[in-house]
Length: 435
Image 1 (cartoon, one colour):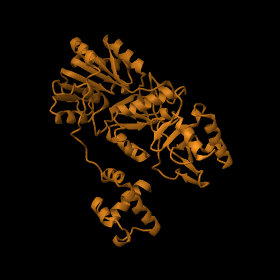
Image 2 (cartoon, rainbow, N blue to C red):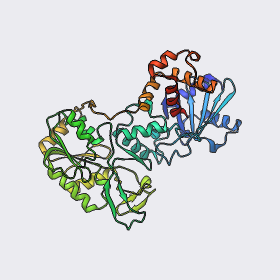
Image 3 (cartoon, rainbow, N blue to C red):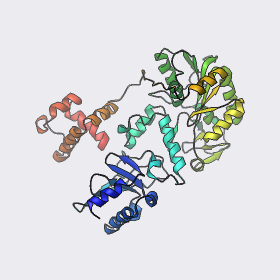
């Protein structure tokens, strides 16, 4: 096969994740690509003695006669799997380049795994739900800085979540001991956020945070949503059993009970919490909870109607339909899905009809006002993305010299000084990224 035929075959492939000038595809989806291309990929692997166990993702370069065999050993198990090793084969120059990432903590990772596989794969629906979970949390808003493990974890933390067994948690209930018979410690760990929570974003999207409505956050944690709403001039208040137990609970137009019911291990208390939140509601109640498929739930130790996670925390996962049924059976009201694990329940039926009539028209872009202090490393990552070539040249100079270069040993020293401040500071920040 020559480069022209190779390029034509790749253009015919519509499956896979397209990133820049390359298309990525999991080996399980090879039955959906041209047989000539599949046979060629296997032929090259065999000719170079690349074991089948050393790769499961193929990177098809669309502008070059080149293949990359990538190994993500936890592709199916880890929602955001890490790259262990890669072998890039330059078919024009008959060379290959091997890279191993197992010794580094900040490895490249994958997102949107459903794009790598066929839609008839048994894991397709689960992968879609993982992606929807991240989108609802706002994690994909800046795709340029989420390609590496540490950056991804930092983005998750900034948005007010923690990663537990690969899934996003906003709150968790800590269990005192590993045995399910012990009493649950009901202290909640509230997470700090850099943006509105996904239920509040749903309200903003449908123009309910325009200042016309009062808002009560039932289970508000540290109150980051409240600070942001108040910064926009919205009349907002909140109560939390741990962080704001002294605050009175009073009726408001909009009430949000966000990711609260999934951390209550007692079903009757869960039902009571939804009833209490609905009693405070004058127009609209927002109910949200963690969503996961059966395949994910089966990984954990069962406890009551939920599970114990690897962090010894209780979590009640719902399916989308189960959550809707729980809300409707509890309140005897219609629950309208507005996102994965997010439902609107209207007490004001006229407001409900207006919402349904105008649902396709209501789109409001929320502009974040409040923020938490950004670390120098986080700021540098943004500068690095904008001036990647400059910093790569500086890093390579450090590697060649075996030390930090003096000002007269690097041609763009003034630019480095302008962007960061000094060679030493630049090296320290780059070292934290590359190791």
